[in-house]
Amino acid sequence: MAPQVMADGVPESAQVRALLQLRELILSGELAGGSRIAELAIVERLGVSRTPVRAALLRLEQEGLLRALPGGGYVVETFSERDIADAIELRGTLEGLLARLAAERAAPAAVLTEARGVLARIDAVLATPTLDDEAFSDYVALNSRFHALLAEMADSPTVERQLERVCALPFASPSGFVLAEAESRQARDMLIVAQDQHRQVLDAIERRESARAEAILREHSRLAQRNLRAVLAGHTQGQAHAAMPALKLIRRR
Image 1: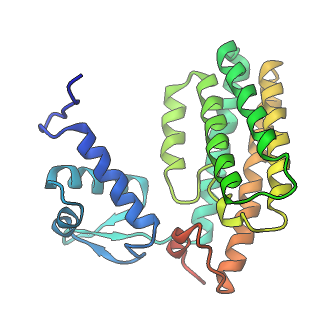
Image 2: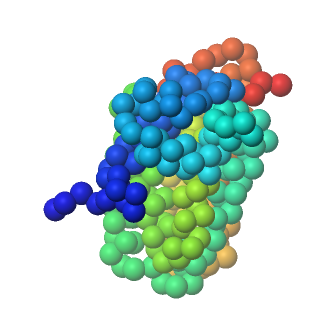
């Protein structure tokens, strides 16, 4: 199959690759918060043409990672604690809406079956008394898949697109703070609570209890708020989290 080509003649894969590479440079801390970014410098650094880089810069501006400068170029954005808390709150609101719609519209049986299978795999990850980095990474992947399935159940592309935009913001995704707290003594207990909420929301959707499903996912996002406060408390005290260099994008008060 021939690669997809965009209207400007650039292969779609080149645009996606430029976007992923540039986003990684920011979230890895290689492009620090507040630093200026010039299009030509990124072209040279990534070794691609200007067209995919221009598209990547525009997309990251839309996501909120970059801010366009009046005279041209961009600057890497930084975020306050309130910015991040608001993004998590918005994500919980949208996920709650999707859960309510899934319950009201009767989620497809095949998607429900896959979601139950994902939860069973999360149970296996959480079965051990202590979790290593590999286990946390497995949890992140499975957790992301479960939340994607919840969105799919609602059959609402409109709301799902808005959720995708919110989750693209730093720290706003369902697993945004999991790896940062991987070494915390309370981390596994927090994940067990989250897993119970996963099961409860799936039960509510299957029972067509829309209000309950929405309330559970709204409450689910509160765990991320709690993790945010814990991580930022350590960050303020100078405790670096190797798993999350993007914490450098958070403005200290």
